[in-house]
Length: 602
Image (cartoon, rainbow, N blue to C red; front, side):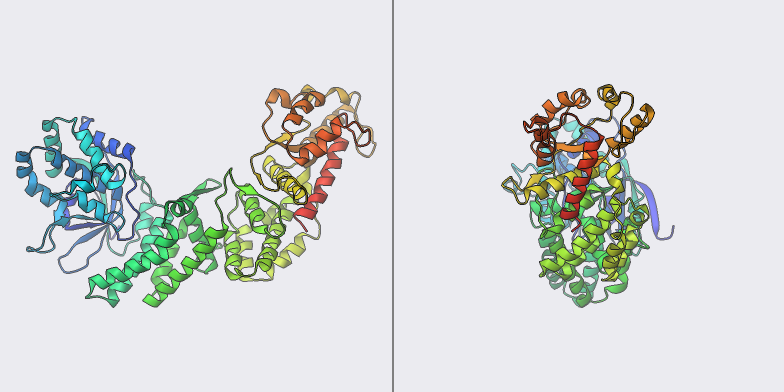
């Protein structure tokens, strides 16, 4: 492949180039004690060091005779190994240090010119540059290092502690093997400057902490910034650095990594089907869709980095372009974070017609769908000062989705990508679609509803009932679904079939028909409820009176207490139930349907 080489190499990668540069805006050093120990043991415990994976680098020629490699993947390993070598050197006796210093200088340091001072050959990104240079030097200020347990300084201290238990002979041998290139420990993949690094990276099974799509896109963005600012201030490195740093801090650092809470939010993972991605990846996908350069028709999520790289190359030509792009990215990201909240077991939900967003996002999560997130973000962005219009538009989408699910309209559900693009590009399209699907709501889903959907509908009906009552209006989504008439009903519910049941219209059924008739009612929504704890199977399959004793213990919700428990234990004959049958299931099914109409399909 032109512009691409892959070569199994020894440690001498540090000797082969003047600089190994971790791009200025790459993520910080994240390895922890378990990673440090694994690498340390590779050289001091194993008889022969094992393979450390591949290092992906890219040439970046910045001047005649000045060769630089940008580290695309391998930052954690290169950093940790260089710290280990420095720690070994610092832990040996003075005589050996003197003998090894020249080779150490050649391995870990470089000089721009004959007269300039040595600087670390691995040039770190802004996040870790200061700490790294405290370690990779011959004269250290230990007050800055002692006691640190995490990050680069923690790594150095950890190695020093472990080396105190290693013999001088072993330390000297490992250091000598490093400096003389005796370890064949990795494959170096070198790309030419203009080659697409992500296409190569995605095929590698690298050790360490893998890059996400957002890591790569961030690097693309600020490589572009680097190019444009370098053109403007070609002879003034300090001004270039200051301007880039200011732009980065304002448009990326303050938005995505300003503190632990912010960084945790954007790095939290979302699983859609079998695909796992970070919330930042999801946001960048949404941003690309609503700004017209990522097509849900033509692109898959796996194309995200390639699409961004092409967009930046073809559309961002000036500093004004990149400033406008980053300002838009920042504003949109703030809106995303303010509205697409972290959703977990501690999240509280409450019903309100004035807060459709929470309901809609919950519906999408329950159904494992992120397809419509770009449309939701677009609505929030365009109408951020008009909550009524936001609710109106989002409720249209909620209604469209619910009716399709209720009618089991699979042809519509399969085309959600096309639908999302259509409603983003045409303001009237969603209203037209809702009118079409709502003309004949069949509710077929209610007759054999999945556990996920049943839990969702029952939960929101419960919140709807609590909206105008004195009960707590906010609940966590932590309840267990229970079939009142169990799926294994034949164990303890067969006796009442006798010679056959009558259906709800009074028609007599024979025994086989009765069995089929009962089976068809088991997965109706009317036969399900939510409990504050899960019944064990031995209780769940018991006869109705025995089961009701336990259901009563776990009945904290109105949909269980009012609909079932109170009616069973009522002293008033009117409305009292003594058994649970198909007629009661259908009656409750119809009542729940009417509540869903009022609560969700208004």
